[in-house]
Length: 364
Image: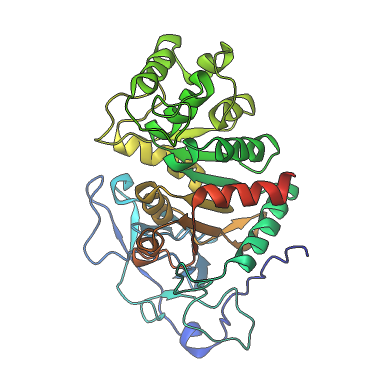
């Protein structure tokens, strides 16, 4: 089967409650980074704002942001801005309702058929380890094929479990080399584990993971080598790294954003230790992502899910952003929906099995 992209439809603006709704109230920012009181905080759903009598769709509605409006006659538009990025003079939308009574309307039925009525356009809820995921896998395969064929942007969040398993590393490497990946987010140790395996053939010092883990010497030797060469790219180009997804990312020019954490004992040259800089680096890709797959990295998953729109506008067409979260723990996949990213398809399974299944379906 081939993927049929859900078609988006706008609300019927001829309805009386939308036609007669007031324009939004705007208030200027007085101090950089300080929002006016009663600001409107956005959700993950499509949101419309009435400006000069026109309903304007926010292109990238996402959590933990505010709406800055341009109310110039004939140039009505909105920008979605993080609080810390507000500038003096920005016109912020004021209002705490979402029913058009203050010129703000949240629309949850844009991807539903006209006769379909559900609370939200969430793909599915209540997933558990007993859920059968065969249909989810089939849909994901078609999504990834569609993205590759149509110039989509696929972002992966990669957890350490993928870097510690030989077959998982090579599966991810093949997906990168075959054009299914456009950006990767991960932590220092995930990247370093993959490089260690590619240089020394070990994971945590062991050639076979079944043996007792007893040393991080090779891990830190790997990080020190990258620092000696000045970058991971230079380390890969030295020829020391034989395989792995980091090598593939360098050679295929796939950006890898490595956000540091307080737990990092030693960082790669590319590790971004400033949290705002790391957030900006991740958001640059999240905002243009059309499909995102989050695999066994709960902190990065929650952070990325919150900054990624559930829909976006590509080539002037509104389409859903496909989100998948994969983890062996139900807690981990449920945590994302608890935080408000309700459109993610969750799959409670081993990420090593997951990535190998995707590799077999697309590459073999």
